[in-house]
Each structure stands twice: as structure tokens, then as C-alpha cells.
Image (cartoon, rainbow, N blue to C red):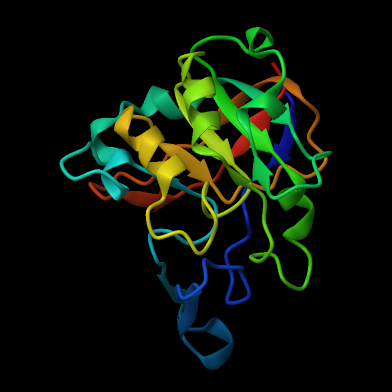
Length: 211
């Protein structure tokens, strides 16, 4: 296997975050240059900062959190859908094309124009989002998880989160805030395990490999 791309957003005080969420805090506790015997740091993270997994429990009461999923859920065949050509905000089911090209039981990653915005001055505004019927169409391919290149599958000002909730109601995790810029459509291997926490979300390192 060959590493195609690290899809993760680097974690730093400057990491783009969902509007209103706190950025990562990386603090030095001890430094060799200051006379300490070793370097020691603290890392304080919001569970939904950077590239991360949202468990169904994030949106549905009583649904599984991340501890309910086997590790192999987050390692295996993936398929990238390239929708970056679409200039509109709302991505609809009709934009997906022939879904029979998507292998069943894959980890579906949707690349949109959002991926090209991560390095821009305002990466978390004016983003493409998913019509809930997109989730219905993707579920017909029985995916293991669905990935997207924004913090939310829904508009950032949504208060009902229909696309996210529909995916969660199907018992599937969402892998969000992916950087898929430059990744071509097709089949890959994805590695994106969460931290071993019984929470509704966890930051991940998402790595995309050739088959």
C-alpha cells in the first residue's frame, strides 16, 4: 500500500473549528531549554475539533457511541465520490450519478469544493452541504461510514441536522472535516480509528492508502 494523502487537519491553535467551538490548546508544561530534564506538554481538545468521527449518539438519544464500534469499522475499503465540480451549496441525490459504481460495504468519502477551502481565509463559511436524500441514496449501497469535507453534513446554521440525523438513525458514524483536496474519485483503503473513548465523538488521524 502507498499513502495517497493524510486527510486530517493539523491540530494547532489556528485549526479551523466549527463556529463557536474552542480551538485546540497546546501548552508547554516543561521545557529542556528552560532547565527541565525533559519536554512535557498538555493537549486540550474539544471532541469535535479537526478531523473527527461523530457517533450516532451525537444526534440520536440512546444510539451507540464510538465505543460500540469494532476497530475494523474504521479500517478497510473506501470509495471517494468527487463532487468538487458542483458550484452550488446544496448537493442533491441527483448529483451523485450512477451509484452502482460504488462498492457495497465501503467507507464512502464525499469530496466537494469544501476541500479546497481549508487553506483559505474563511474555511468554515459558504460551504457545500448534503440534502438528506443524499444520505438515503448512499444508504442503498450499505456503507460502513460516510465521510465529508466539512464540519457538518448540514448547513452550518441548521438546528435540526436532517442529513446527520438520518445517517445516525441508520446506526452509521460520520467522518467529518476531511481534507480531500486533490484526491481523485475511486477505490482506496482508509484508516481512521478514533481514540478509545465512550463518547459521541473523537478526533482521528485519517489516512488514505492505495489498494
